[in-house]
Structure formats: structure tokens, C-alpha cells
Image 1 (cartoon, rainbow, N blue to C red):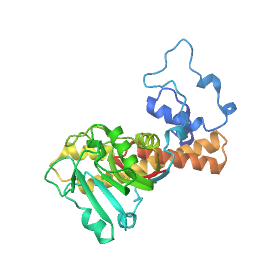
Image 2: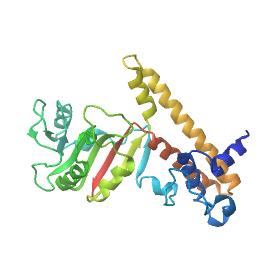
Image 3: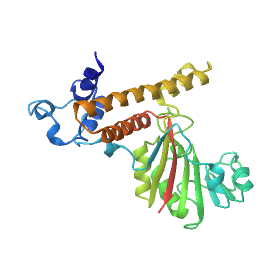
Image 4: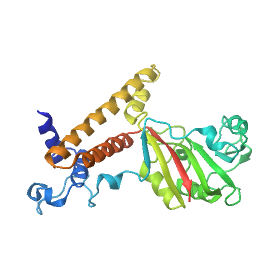
Length: 288
């Protein structure tokens, strides 16, 4: 199949997997409505839509988070963020961040719900014993997924942060159940919980590792898989990049979109594809 025919198939075939079709639809909906062949695109009234097809008509931009998106890149330098700041390290464990914060003039407050760690306060993330607007920085590194009431935890973070303070860390998404995990959060969940608690998701990074390579590691344990996993993740990013290039060609030559618009959409497509499959996300969320 030629590249052009492949792109046409990806953008128009109604018999592909619902998830793939959803993304093809999202790219198509970015162009003007009168460019779409309504005869081929409309769903016959006497047929039930395929399983998995939602009622809402979502575009790619609807699904993308409204923030700066980074793929396989760091989004903050921990020392510079915590320098001379009061830091609440929720789920601090054995206190690996304590020395770092204090070395740059910050005040570290470690919080754990369980005895035995390096914490200074025993408390739940859903019920923090601190005054409103009393911290500059809140850290939760691989903690959110282990909190039973994640919505309440976000509310508490928003409460104790000072205006313009930041909530940083990492949350699992495509990881399997581990330790005792409850809520593995998508990028849209991070955005939603931020928005309803007076905060804004500013930066998001994913695509360094993926659910696919993560579950291969779990499947093959105890065989060594660390190096192989990095190569597999690189191959996944390459695949998504090639799909984005094909999408660009389809948008530019089949849908007659100008180069800059086609590039903007295909680049966003690449980023969202990487986020959809990501192992988890690093985030910077700011108190408004």
C-alpha cells in the first residue's frame, strides 16, 4: 500500500479499531466542515454505531491537555524550585528530598500516613494539619495513585499552597497495580482536579517510558529488562512519530490544509499519542 493510500485509509476507513478511528476523526474535524464528504462520514440512521464510539464529537484539541506538553523531557529542576521555599513533601518515605531542600536554604516538612519513615508529621494527604496558604511548594512523587480519595488530596494541596505556589511530582498512569494503588491518573484527570481546586496544570511530561514496556518488564521479571525497555520505548516514540508524519501528509495533500496548520495538528497528534500510552506523568501545577 502506498504512503498516500495508507494515509487515506488511516483518515477515512470506518472499519478500523474505534480508538484509531477516533484519532482519525479528530484530525479530520480540524479542517472545515465543507471539506468532509458527508456521504461517507455520516452514520446511517438504521445502524448502531460501533462499540466504543462516544456520543460527543471530540477534536484532538479537546483531548489534549491545555498546558505545555513535553515528551521524554524533564520539566523542572528540583533544587531551583525548592530553593529558599517552605516545602511539603507528601508521602516522603525515607526523606530523600530533605537534604536537597535544606542544602538550598529551604524548609522541608515531610508527611507520611505511616510510622517508620523520615517524616516530621504523621498525617493523611486527605486531611493535612496545616494552615491555609502555608507552603510554597508541595511535592508528591509517585504518591497520588496510592491515595484512596485523590480528589480530597487535590483539595488539600490547593488549600495549603500559597498563591503562585507549585505542586510538582510524578503520578502513575499505565502502570499496573502496585503496592496498594487506587487512582492511576490520566493527563486529563490531572487537569480536571487542578481546575476545580483553584490551580492550573502548567507543564506535563510523558512518553519517556510506556505502559507497553512497563508490562513487558513485569511479565518477564526477574529477567533483566532495563536496557531492553529503553530501546522498546524509543521504538514506540519512533512509531508515533511516523504516524504523525503520515497524518501530516494526509492533512496537507488530501485535506488541502496549509503546511503550518497541518504541522501543528500532526505535532499535537504525536504528543497526545505518547501521552495516551505513557507509563506516568511528571507535572507542574500552579496555585492561581
